[in-house]
Length: 492
Image 1 (tube, rainbow, N blue to C red):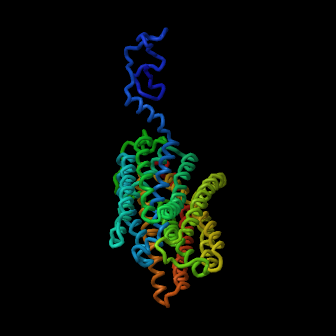
Image 2 (image 1 turned 60 degrees about the vertical axis):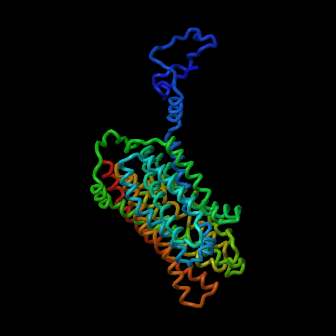
Image 3 (image 1 turned 45 degrees about the vertical axis):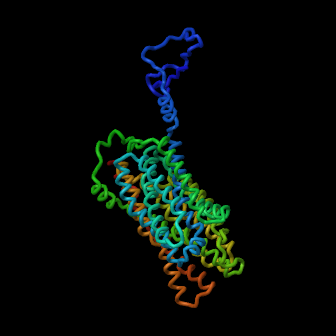
């Protein structure tokens, strides 16, 4: 039997038709003529044709979103077993906070490099290599013994390098596959992976530890999924022309130099202010992701509804609950953010930054309330976390969409990378360690007690709502310049 994979069918030219059938005697089916220009499809050609049919923009966006879930899931698996790591390696609050700080520092240093590469070379190859790299390092780190904490910290730095390639480049592929409201929707799905993956990281880490009776197994599940995602990207994600969705692919004749790109981005006021606002979000989410489960555990010890961890395996209940809340609030935040922005665009063209500003300022109120009610009511604290996180997560996808509007296609990977660099440098690169450092300093000021351990961490975390308000101000500044910068990008 021969199969036609002709040009009209979206397959391979030069193959014989599917309605051209050989009988057992070797004769042709009646009424069918063979074409001398056609030849049987080879197995490799059939496979390639099938792959091409599966490379739809929607499928590519789904695979990239799956990869982003794994990206953030791996990042927060460590936070899900933080108590166990602290006991295993016998380190202080600032020492354990160093894990996330080293990860983010390496992430932000590598991001501009991958942004440069992503604007000039095959993006999906870079993505796949990055996923395979961080998956291998995460798996290897699960075998590090307690005498080598420095090596465990170093491994988190290497994971940050691998993950920076994904975060810098993957949004630009979606930006080149979709435009307008379709792009907003797909970026919303993609950035839903941030809270969803973060929450699943807590859940995966806690569940794997409980099932295996050993926290090291928390680091041995996500690498397998990561390698699967890397393989899917290689086979099923296309490499679209830069500016294709914006109908600029044929008009982009050459790329500007890296120095020219950086000068243009520095003059782009919407890009600068939205990047600073993104840094405020990163500061808060980085601190919360690392410390809130531990803070709530200490609150329960103070209320005498839980006992201090003296066992080999510590309680993971708070990590599981916080992870589940993060998943749900991430879904709600991204969906509400996309729907609200689409609705508000009918009223004002500045809807994107204004929605972000209002959500940030509202979030600061409920974040403050967490530390007010936690001493008396854990349920009340969870309610405040739920509302505060939902409002905070509203702006993830919208911020990315703002960037797509005000930056031309050939600079987007660089812009995403440097926005990530800025947000991490001023945000979660230092916030986990800074909060731990303040907590340690406050604990040393008074007699060490369970109550003071809880209060000192709460006082340190009170820095977050002030930073969130500052982020809201930056989004308001973005709204002032958004229309001018968008028009400049369209003209260029």
